[in-house]
Length: 412
Image (cartoon, rainbow, N blue to C red):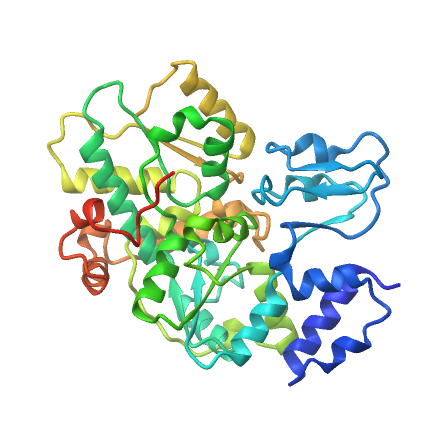
């Protein structure tokens, strides 16, 4: 019987190049459970076991999971709890036998892209700069994705702008004494899962805001109710976030950079050789979300822009990587608080260090930093596209983000 990776590649190739799916009935030489995972990934957990575990009693995958989501059953087969797994992918990285793999949604997503009669949008994460070659500009990537079958590409950094503004307004409203503090709710689902599952007492310090991914998906569906939304990023945890019941209305499919790179390879699409199609909608604040400390930097700059004479200024502390995030939270719980705005990113380096990033996180950070420096606007309050988007969504003032923003609000 052939391997899971061979099955994945064969089914993806055939899905991209065949006009029908009759070939699926001829795949007897493959494991039927693996095939079902590829065709119906939403039925399965975020991590798949592709072979029997041979690690004996010492199972590093079990030891490293901060959410206790993986454990062997009475037969020794590893079980992943769909409810508890948040997609940190530490178990996959620690599996010595290489018998665990992250879920792949690309095959049903491609089938939907090809069959859907309405609009299909690619929502690209801010970390994408440099991932598909340093020569790939946003405009070139937009045309490469159109060659795959998408009707358009939307930079999620525009919605990172909007969430930056919302968090800045929350800070301005709620942080009024030297002992008040705010934990960012933007961006990282692993950070939010850690607070909600392991440190629930801190939830009141998390402002009621969705992530930029959810904001982008909801906005598209508000403007185009029949549209299909496909988020593309470096993160497995986004697949878990998209399934959460209170935000499951936003994103239809979550794909990783690696999944899209596989499609480019099979279809022989070279994004670097595509024609330019530049559209510049985000400010520096929204673009720098992709690296550790970027959210803090963006919110701080925006608070200073909207309330320059504020008595209590933004004092930030940021942590990246699960270990560092837990250490920062432990210090908060112990009363060792020297900041009033705390940012956590589950991956070392931030989103640019996500498990499905295609380049080293320092290189990714450099690309994002340059892209941020090239922005025409420093903060979202200066960005006319933010105001235009809010108005199109029925919000007449920025203050409406606190009072009337169902699209951008989430109760934790």
